Amino acid sequence: MKIKLICVGKTTSSYLIEGENEYLKRLKHFTSVEKIEIPELKNVKKMSENEIKKQEGELILKKIATSDYLILLDENGTEFNSVGFSKFLQKRMNSGAKTIVFVIGGAYGFSEEIYNKAQSKIALSKMTFSHQMVRVFFLEQIYRGFSILKGMPYHHE
Image 1 (cartoon, rainbow, N blue to C red):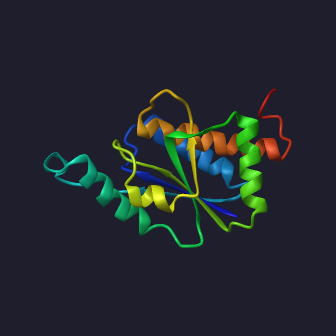
Image 2 (cartoon, rainbow, N blue to C red):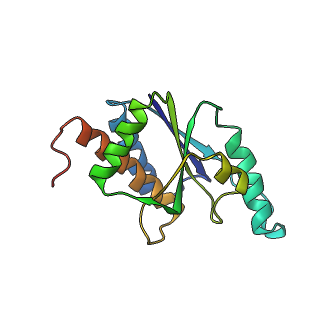
Image 3 (spheres, one colour):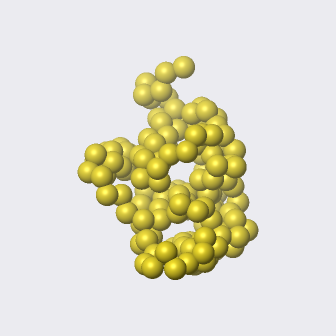
């Protein structure tokens, strides 16, 4: 199984880039992981929120294959604890999905087209985090999920 993490915009803070790289390196022991950054749109001040979401959605869809299992990180999605998330990952792997795609959207969320294509939505918290920080948090949770599945001592109950 392969995991793709699609993110709108670039991570700019060096400490966050370092965190992302650390968890991407750790995840290589479990599965193939690819982080894809969608470039931020230009001239967004002249665009409505819906126009921004639509254009970002078109760019995201270009990175997704029809056979991919699409999961959005969305404030209205299902919340998991770490063990529950590991079970969710196991279920996806058992389903035969070759590629699971997680998407972290832009500041305004996702277009209707992206919502319609998604098979699942996950919420990390009821709190709001910067899109750049979410990347590190979520990569850590994917790593934690795999370490739970492998019985490693990383996670403590």
